[in-house]
Length: 354
Image 1: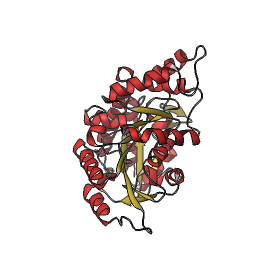
Image 2: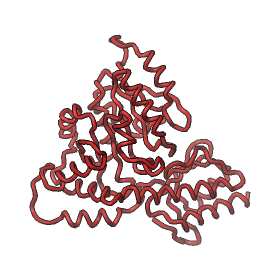
Image 3: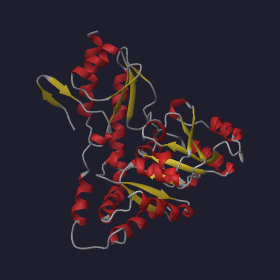
């Protein structure tokens, strides 16, 4: 990614953090693992080391299962904690609800996503408590409460505080349901919170985590991290049936080991978050531009006049456009200050030329 001149127009790619390259450290780890013959299907030394590394990182014994996508991580995690007739509570804009093609419903065999409103794209405890209170337990015609899922960082780039996570975890325990976190941008949230992985997960009641790595420097691998070990065996069968038990698992494990070695994942996320803050602060100073939500991770949502949005598109700037002339800008680990500043200047010129 970068800034390029093409026939007098500037190209910026803030469409997604998925557009970024693979981190050099992870490429080196893949090359290092690419020697000799090893046992397949996770019986290799890299896979064994991965279990130890993640247990150390989370300060408790965990089981980690590499998967190829975040959608697989979410759908299979939720399938391990929700019955076909169960209900999964989530925010109305949750990725599992809006952007995963019904994968959760497919892999659970029909569990219902029960969506709730919440400010800044965060599930609110009062709304969750009320929904759980209204749940018709034992009624054959109604979905039975099984799980709650939150996204960290959220789809609007906001971050649940530790107290908010703990409150949802406590509510889940009191209701006898499981707690899942979609951590597609988990590293970005940790940088914002300034806490350890343990403090943001199992110590706050989380049972299972979808850990994103692909958006933050990995090549092809995300992971499911299991804190509630009772979930591990049924999940292992689901992974196999879903085609997520890789024969050459060492290459998935090697990526995740490198991702967490010497806190690489936090350093990459910190770089992305820093560029997003710079971008948000710069845009907020421009006439006619307003930030839709706080910039707490690596996503910036800004509203601006339609003419400005159209002009930006004409300059080959890439971003995700939302209704109401809102644009989503996503920074990543190799975004630069110069790139951010040039984009802010481009928006400034478009605003002044209206």
